[in-house]
Length: 571
Ligand code: DON
Image 1 (cartoon, rainbow, N blue to C red):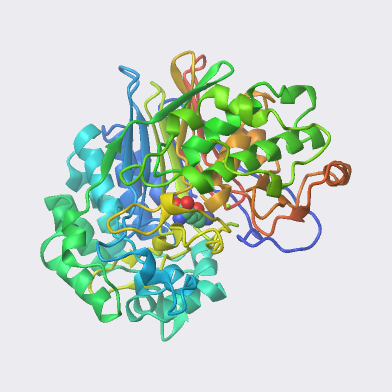
Image 2 (cartoon, rainbow, N blue to C red):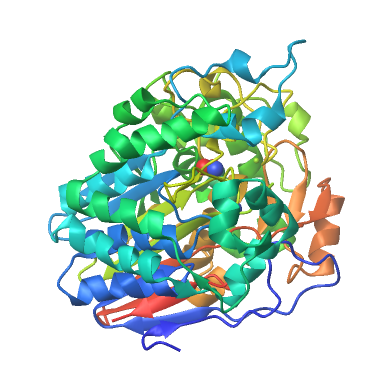
C-alpha cells in the first residue's frame, strides 16, 4: 500500500447490494493529517492531490489535479466529458465561491426531440446514445477554478494525469469489476472507441492489465498548455463534434465553443449552531438540503434517538416535502426564476411542516408543491479536500450513469456523458432516478439540466468544519442530510456518522427506502404502522466522502464512505 493512502478493503461491496439478509458493516477508511487531507473514490487520484499540496499547491490546485486524475483513473465517473460543481472556501477572508460546470443542452435540442411521433416521452433517446450527450463542462470548470483561485501553472496540475494516461496504470480489482458488470460492458462494448480503450478483443480489461489512454493524455497535455480552448475550439472540438455527428448526435462545434463555466453565489443557511454553505441551482440539492434542515430544526430529533422510528419518520416527511417542491420549482436559474429565497426561508419550512404528524405518514398523493409544492444510477464521484488552516474544497462530478453514454469518439480519449436524462420529459415520465419535473426543467436549447449533486461545507465558529457531498442521483441530498444530522444533532463521531445506515424518500414513488443493514426490525415495523411503505434499498444510499477540521488539535480528519470503497490520503 502506498504511504499516506488508507485503502478500504471491501471484498464484496458492489453498487448493487445482494438482496439477502443484512450485510456485515464494512470498515471505512479514516485517517488524519497535520497538514491536509484528500478523501476521494480512487487512490491514485487522491495521492495526486497530496503530491500537489506537498509541492506548494493550495487546495484548489489539489482539487483541479485530482479532477484531471480521476478522468484517467476512475473512468466510470471522473471525466473530461461530463460536468459537476465545485464549492470552495478560502480561510484567509472566509469568502466562499461556487463554480458551476454543469453540462448544457446542445443549441438544437428541445423537448420535442425527445417525444415519439405520437407525442410520448422517448426515454431511450434521452438516456442513452448520441442524443443523451450534454455539452461537457469539466474542462472549463477545472480551468476556471485554477485560473481564479489556483497558485500553480495549469500544466503542473494536468501533468500527473497526463503521466497516468500516457504510461498507463494497472487495472485495479475495483475497476476490473466495474468494467465487467454486464450493463457497463454492454454499453462500452457497443462503441468502437470505448471498447478499444477499456477492453481487448471484445472483453473488458482484467485486473492487472495496463490501462493506457494516449489520446486522453494528449488532450490533457494540451489543456495544461493552452487552457480550455484546447478542448472547446480548433481541431479537437472538430473531431469530437464531427465524430458525434456521425453517430447521429447534434452537439456541434459552436455548442463547444460557446460553453462557459459559471461562477455563482453559494447558498447559505443556518442549522442550530452551525452555518451551511451549499450548492445553488442548477443544483437542486443545496436548496433541498436547506429546506430539510429548516423543517427539522424544531423537530428535536435527539429526543427520539438516532435512527429511531420517530427520527426516520420525521426525516422522511421532510424529504417528501422537499422532493415535491423540487419537481415543481427547480431548474436552470438562467432560464427561469427559481424561488430560492422563498424555498429556503425558515418561515416557509414552518408552513410546510405544519401538517406533519408524529404518528402518521402523510401520503405523497396529499402533498403537492408547497408555494401557492428521486433511484440511484451507477456513478458520480465526490471528493473533499481540506488543509489545517481551513481552506476547503468540495467537488462532485459526473458522467451521469457509470461511464456516461459509453461513447468515446476515436482519437479524443474522452468518454461522453448521458446527462440529458436529468432534464424532465414531464410528470408522467420519471427519469433514471425516478425523478419527475415540469417546465422549469424541460429541455431547452443551451439550458443546464437540473442536478441533485450537493457539494457542501459546514462552518462552526466561523471556520470550515466539515466538507462533504455524495454521488447517488436523487439520493444525494438525503445522504448529505443524514451525515450532517448524525454529526450535529446526534453528535456521532465522524466515522460512525458516515457508516450509519441511511434511508431515502423522494415523494414519488411514495416509498421509504431503508439500507438493508442496520435498521432494526422493530424500527421498520413502527414505520410501517405509521403508514410508510418500506422497501429494502436495492442500492447503497450515497457515498459520502468527508473531511473534518479539528481546530483544537490542528488536524484534519478524512473518512471515506465504506459503501463504495473510497480512500483517504493525508499529509
Ligand atoms: O446530476 C445529477 O443529479 C445526476 N446526473 C447524478 C448521477 C449520480 O449521482 C449517479 N451516481 N451514483
